[in-house]
Length: 232
Image (tube, rainbow, N blue to C red; front, side, top):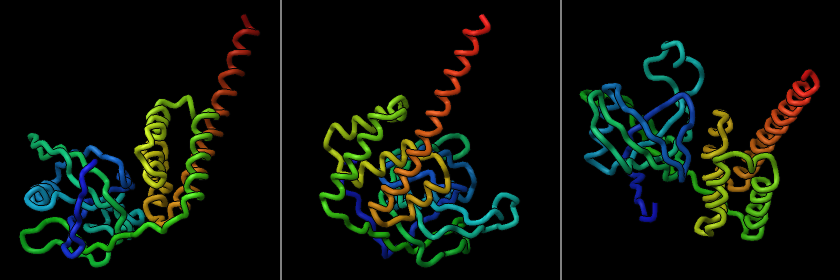
């Protein structure tokens, strides 16, 4: 999004919790909102700033329905509703990730309000020098262009973003993480990490793991092909 999005951290923000971190800064998430409490949340949000914090459940109690209001992990991704449509059972919305934020004070449902909110504090990026970021950018470009990862369709989109020169390195790392990191624990680790180079380390390790899996899959396909040739 090209326009500047303002966030008033003096006001509480509605919380939409899910089992995993599906929203990262600079990414978008399409969501189907159908539970009554979250339909109400969207209605209230659309009447205001249009911002929701995507939170993650902590622990396993939510899996068994043991907790009416499960504990949440401390770091959220604050998102802006950029599209919405009313449907028969609720809303279809598209949420654009704005920034990382830490839950400061929880506000539990009360009276006619069915959903939780929280006062948030922005999780500010710890800066890195330009030479360091240039090295990170070059390393990731090489990793995506010169390894098995280049075969992946989503990598093509990331490389186009790199080539355009419209995105700085911290933003590119967010794009890479959103497009290629699927492990739920690693996605939350990236969300919770305030250091740009720290996020780069997590993403690099995950891409190297993915490259290894692709190499193993390619080796297995070649072995299967050799076997088929030999028996024919």
